[in-house]
Image 1 (cartoon, helix red, strand yellow):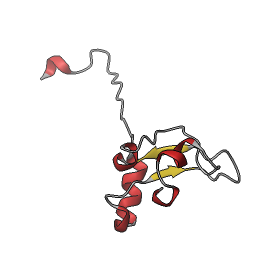
Image 2 (image 1 turned 180 degrees about the vertical axis):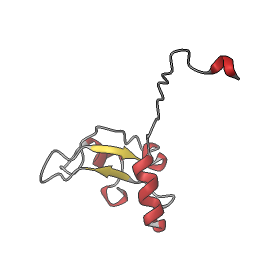
Image 3 (image 1 turned 30 degrees about the horizontal axis):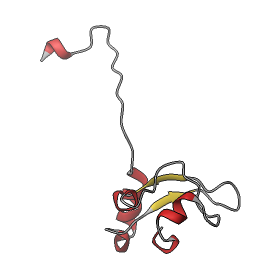
Length: 84
C-alpha cells in the first residue's frame, strides 16, 4: 500500500456532493423520500436557481442551475411545481 501514498505529502481529494442537500432534507422530512425534490434559492430575493435535486426530480429533467419559481420556468415546466 505504501506505493499509493503521496510522494510529497499532499492529497487532492474531490468529493461530489451532488444530491447531498436533497438527501439531508429527506432525512429531516421522511415523507419526502421517493418524491421529486429540488433545493432552490428564494425566487423573491434572487432568481430562484435550483442548487440540487433528487434523483426522482432528475428523472423529470430537473437539473442544477435551472430557474425555478417564475411562470414557465425551466424546472417548473419539466416537473409539476407541486412536486418540487
